[in-house]
Length: 152
Image 1 (cartoon, rainbow, N blue to C red):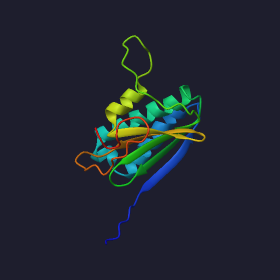
Image 2 (image 1 turned 45 degrees about the vertical axis):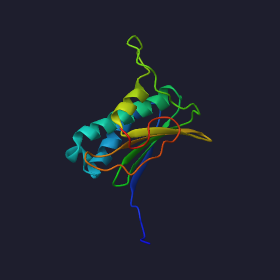
Image 3 (image 1 turned 90 degrees about the vertical axis):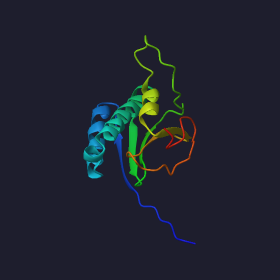
Image 4 (image 1 turned 135 degrees about the vertical axis):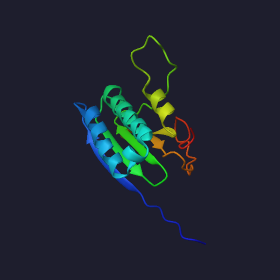
C-alpha cells in the first residue's frame, strides 16, 4: 500500500470590526500573490477577494464579531475560512430587488466551487473552496449548509 502525504500552506489573521474588511482583502491579495494566483488565475483571485469581503462583512455586521480569516492552499483547493462568535449558521436568501443586503452568502455560493458552515462551541466557521481552472475536484464534503465543497 502506497504512502500518501498532503502538503498545505496556510495563513491566519484576525480582523477587528473597525477596518477589518479592507485590511482582510489586502492581506488576502498578498497571500494570493505568493501562490501566483493574481497572475495565473486573476479571475479566481478576484472571486476569492470578493468572498473574503462578504465573509468578513457577515462576521462584523451579522455576528457583531471580529473575524478570524484562515487561508489554506493544499494544491487542489484554496480554502477560505472565516470564524466569528455567532452560533447562527448562514442561509442563502432568495434575491429581493428592494433589499439593501442579504446577498452575501448567495455571492459566495455563486463564486466558489463550494462552501459550508460548521458550528463550533465558540461560534461558527464558514469555509469556501476555490480551485484554479482545469483542476480536478478531490472534495466531497457537504458539511453543514451550503453546496458540497468542490461542486460548482
